[in-house]
Each structure stands twice: as C-alpha cells, then as structure tokens.
Image 1 (cartoon, rainbow over the protein chains, first blue to last red):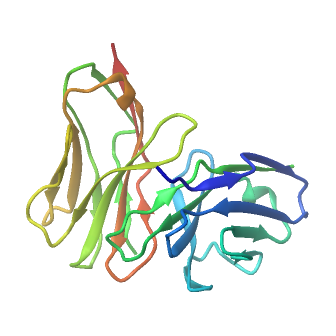
Image 2 (cartoon, rainbow over the protein chains, first blue to last red):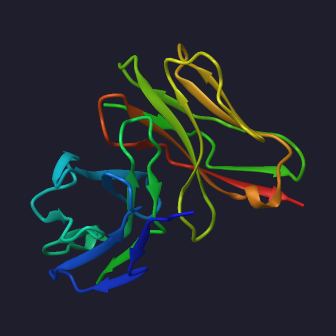
Length: 114
Length: 114
C-alpha cells in the first residue's frame, strides 16, 4: 500500500539556522499538509497546499515558514530561522481531496533545535 | 474555533475484551467529518474509522465502531475483541466540510494486557 514518506527521521539544527523538511506524498494525491506536535501537546495544523498554492494556514504558520512543491513528487517545509520553540515532531500528510477523504500521514520528522 | 477533547489520557484493556475511548468536540458547524486515527509506537498515524455528520448511522469497520451523538457532540470509539496489536495512541479528529485542516484531540494511550 502506498505511503507518505518523510526525511530525515530526526534533524538536529542550531538555533537561527534554516531547515528543510522533506516529504513524498502518495502519488495520486492532490492535497498536501503539514502538522506539528510539540512534545506533550496536541497535533496542530500548519498548512495545506493544493494546485501549487497554499489553500489554508494556521496562525502558527508565520513568515518564518514556507512550503514548496519543487517537482512532481516532493513537498517541503522550510523554516527560515529556527527558534527553540520550533522543536517538535513534524508530520506531512496527503489526501486525494475533499473533506471526506482521509489524510494519510507520514512517520514524521523529529526536529530538535539546540 | 473548533476544539476536540479526549478526556482519557490512558486506558487499558484485557486482550479479547471491549474498550471504549471517549471524544467530545465543540463546533458551530452542522456539516463536518470526524475521524479516529491510530498511532502505534514510532509509526505513522493510520486512519481507523470516519463518520460523516450528516449520517445518522454509526460507522463500523470490523472490530471498530463509533457511537456518534451529534446533539451531544460526542464521538466515542469502541474496540471489540481487543488484540495486542491495538496498543497505540488513538487520536480523535474533526474536519469541517468547508475546510482542509484536521483538529486533533490530545490522544488516548491504549494498553492491551495479555
């Protein structure tokens, strides 16, 4: 069964550095998402992406964050200048489309900011 | 804003027994979707079951069923004949009909005793 894959599984970065988290969504899916989970807290929505543009974003997704689909398979989340509070598990998800279509999640990337 | 609450941080069940995980949500919408996701340790979140709010009939998937009470804004998950492989974090999630984002509850850790 096709899966969403995320790389790396764990990323350690110095505060203030840029980081790019990578995701390969399921190939026939049209909607792509990023969520994050700070340790001990709820999974929180960051952004959704459709037709090469952001379709929805949360308050968390400020100017430090950006998303891109640089080619036909990858979907990336960039954090421009990382802060300590960006340390979290970041999950990528994809869906065929529509609110009744389930979102399929990757294993997540654990981001640790030092 | 929508909120999802899972009041049981941890639950345990004896193998082959039945367990019910609770979820309540708050929304002013009338049309929405509800989901239960399972996250085994160090693994990706997997959709267990989904419910459309316009459907009165409770969703069922093999050993998993829900008790959807729209007026009470309650969406509990029943696992029958519990198996060791059911041990995981279980997340309840809400999605509005017009939106892309999933709003998650805090999760319930289910332990299955042999």
